[in-house]
Length: 303
Length: 306
Image (cartoon, each protein chain N blue to C red):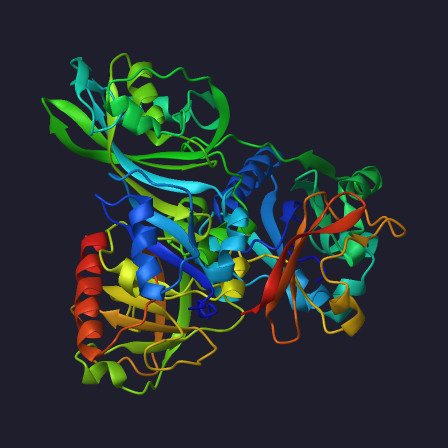
């Protein structure tokens, strides 16, 4: 039996609960929308909660534009103990008395991580997630790589464990930054140890969730039309062009040469979302120095 | 506009000053310091509307502050005076040199001007620091560069009205507050609603917000609302198109449910000060589900505001 053509295209901003993998969320949404093509942006560890941007149907072709968005996390740094996984899921491997630590010193130390820094990453190794390898006690060689911390706010002390402070933090950073590494490094900089707990991704770019987990979002979060989601990509300043000229429409997907005019006001990599006269997305073009090149051409116009 | 401050000389900064955010406040404190050193008055020269709304109305940014709010906030910085220049079609055509002569030199007797190196003003952005430097010797004023101060709060993001608008467009009112140095506030009059909220046990005030103002993204927020008598109340705010009841409504609406408040708000001007984002918009399968979610929203708003 031929599969029915998909009628559902769009994005869902989901608040992932603990205990689910990002893939579990995808499975749930496959059933909700009766659609096989579901993808998501930015995997979250099973223990972590917060924003996953999920694309449905033809919107999966557009996920690439969501990958590089800055991300905002909240979490709690538990001072005084290091764990094998750098978060609360691992075993405590070292402890130190840090009971004299003040919030002012934590703030001062946090500031030194703001800006472009080198971070030892936690990545997939041999196709396996690092947190799995770490849980099995494996050693992983990790090379430092550049990340950017835009914002590292220390909100305040949450509680004390064994007289050591537990501090709530909020970090906005480039894609690929590891928050538990930031937490562990913060402990080290302050002359002791620390690990991360209660990691929550508050935002991917302009897609945000509240501080409190929304348990029902997988089933109730509305399907956001493709064009509405794209409009929020660039802080509400995404560039759309509407096209109703038949000749232009016929050449959709071709490279559009702009070299005769040499418009220097257009930066390399600048992006235009091409809409038809009904405000439906047709294609996405990026400027490559002298021409607009198609990055995505939609198989059918989509709202 | 002759002799706006009598014979007193002035130290001036010029700009849209939308939001009067922490970056603006840092500039103003430099203006005040310089004015003190020179025995002059400190003056902010701003416009009665965003220059872009005249020059490029189609892409004019939504305002972070209405004109009245902007004046109140500027007054709170301790600046001696604010000069509001009407910015109409004719001003947008005025040669930058004429603007400097007419407003800054003749009317304000400017002794010093403090602006950033990338500052532009006047017709086709033709006015810049180079022009000010050229006019300085013959008109007896100095051009002081802006000292950029590193932020001490663990944030590496330049504070700008644009960055604040971006944070608001994603609903991140917490981040907007960090850059504003206060909560984002909008003001509007309570319009007669359809009393739908009352029928399900959650009376709300529909607050009409001028379309020129910047609202956070659609969703539910914890906020403090100041009512007509000046008292402040915790509130749950819904901004949205109300998908359950009005499938095709276009304009975003602001509905305020004030906690611990009974009384008629119709016709009053409310000041809504956004504290936290609580959740995004969603569809509800029925009134019961909506009611239980609203109960949850109110509990969360209360927690966020205490």
